[in-house]
Length: 143
Image (cartoon, rainbow, N blue to C red; front, side, top):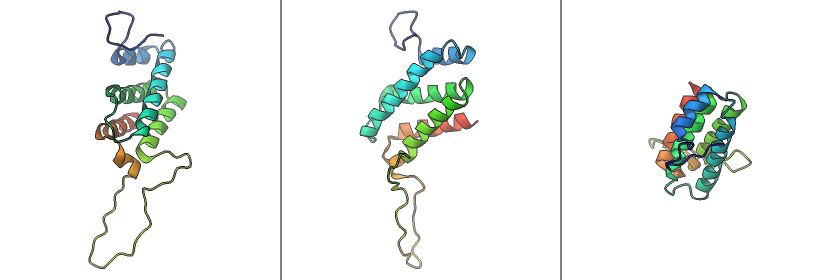
């Protein structure tokens, strides 16, 4: 398995190189992809501890990498797993968590417009770069 780092070792790949190689030979680079997928999950778990904090610089790049590779080289279960992770990050965990996105409706006063947001609270707490990366990745995976 190759490591992702910026050192001068020629056997070390950058994510863009790994993405290219995963697309050319998915079977040979499956372990490398899985390692990056686990790294993404770990970074997301860290991010969920403090959603509004500045994210790790590599998180956006990892989101884009896993979305691009899973949608082209590892369709099916892998791409579904990444899509579910990104959706859960945007709308909050679907594992029994309360959904605060839709508060109870109040009686509307005539003549006063009701402003509602279509974004759940979880998405509003995320750093804007992470929200943008998640949405872009989901669009990429859909196309």
